[in-house]
Image (cartoon, rainbow, N blue to C red; front, top):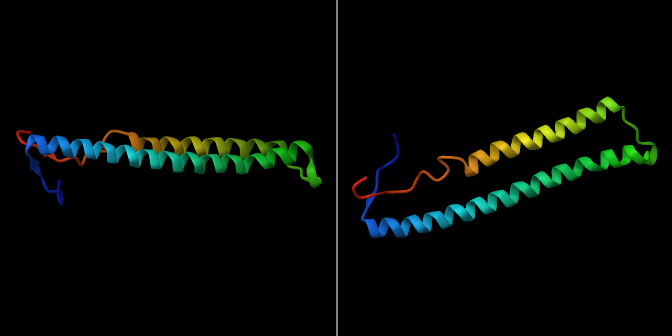
Length: 105
């Protein structure tokens, strides 16, 4: 690949780097997943008051049924789509592909 140098390491050093790299990847994945699940939860929780106000007709709040269906479908579709894209980017193949090669590979 252009712009990417090939690094070869002795086997023992490669193994130490591989363990450190795995720990680093896991820490990043945990941080990403915690942040994203929190963000998706907040987005979902922000939609719930609309249905709550509609159900109890608080303060004269009223939306048509088609509008509520559209809001609910858009919320579920958006969160599911973003979660899928994020999951593939963070945990998919190639997410940890910058590991140095060991000698002989």
